[in-house]
Length: 468
Ligand code: NAD
Ligand code: UDX
Image (cartoon, rainbow, N blue to C red; front, side, top):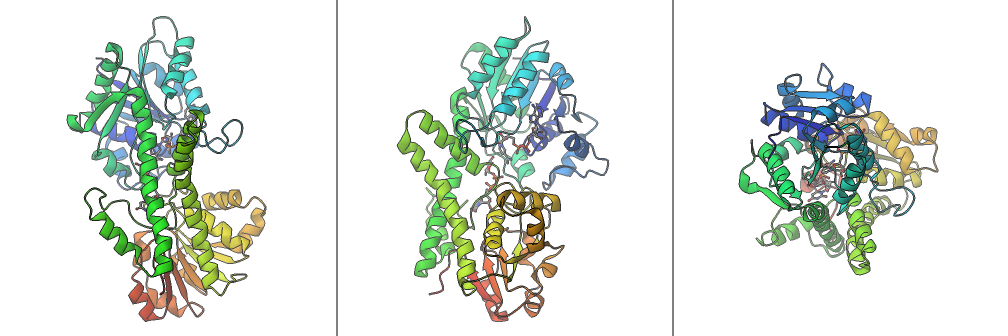
């Protein structure tokens, strides 16, 4: 097997950035270059004050420890490709917005462009690693493109190495992964390439946690893992609706169910709905794959996980309106949190976006506060979610605040959309004094102490808890 000395990662996003920064940190003898066409993003990765383009706990420390030594960020994609012996393709694969498979299939345009670039500029053998999440058998398409366009005497070995990190805990997950998965062709060359990549991870991951499998299993395992994780959340959220209607308590139910060692306690937290760039996209991708394979029942099964999530989001928004005496027109609603989960500034598919869209439809005024999300991102997301409203109208109805206290002032209701730790520590007495009465708190994250808030005087409505 080739001993990897130089790595390039194409795509300096939420996955490429943290993943390859950790590889650089753990493998000081390997030169790692992360390249991207987006110059602003690369500049931010190179920022002298370490104002990096993404927020992840612990990321600055990792970048600080190796940037300029064996970790580099650059817009020179071609040079990166030419110098590397191993190339991670870590570009975005969003859901297609138009054409065949629109709304379901993954848009593989970025993967294809990156692959074509590799073929066009490579002058020596390369190990090409799919890091992006892709449909099963994408490696085959990559191989065809690479082989059809390669220079003579250049050989490419293709591996699948999906990433399982979760945002907000990316560095922890990368330092201490449950497993690393590498898929390769089961040929001598494929197995040798697999060995080369295993040796990189073996710098800090024990060999028995590095799983080596066939290419197609590896590609499918990533979609399968996300589908099964999201399915757990939709299952618990479906039960939360039954709890609200019966007086059962979803925390108690989740705890009782999770005690079964076959089920396990993790990932059973009812919520206002899952968000993030992966779950919905990857399930829809699986749905599309199933349909393409003429498996309509399988497709319908997985599609229901996404439909239940949509239902959960709209059900929660409706509960807010119902509780506020069936109208929120001209009322001030405070939304706490805009990121799709705590400890990230990422808003992709965040439940807060759907909630605010629904509140705007009811002509409410919204005060919004999130500790990490940038203002321009909020306006962009809200405008996209309500294409029938002008940005001017949205800005009249939505007020972005710089603290929880400011956001809660003069409101009729507070809606907790993201489980930021600081929302647990809010001075609720002061908040209560400043609100219109009756003062409502809608807890979409099972975050606050319901008894404590009720004693202060709040009317607390919690996901998965009935008022019977
Ligand atoms: P991202 O949008 O944050 O980053 C992708 C980057 O690739 C962008 O900066 C873009 O400019 C760059 N890019 C696109 N085409 C390029 C090209 N031809 N040459 C150079 N740069 C190019 O996306 P992400 O969240 O990092 O996700 C990347 C992939 O990883 C996706 O397939 C996603 O499904 C998968 N994934 C994401 C997560 C996550 O938590 N975000 C977790 C696991 C897997
Ligand atoms: C997910 C997968 O966890 C990760 O393995 C994969 O690589 C990328 O997709 P991510 O989307 O970053 O990671 O975060 P995750 O922690 O999975 O949360 C996704 C969404 O589900 C968030 O909106 C979160 O709030 C929600 N969630 C999670 C729940 O509502 N309940 C839970 O019990 C867990």
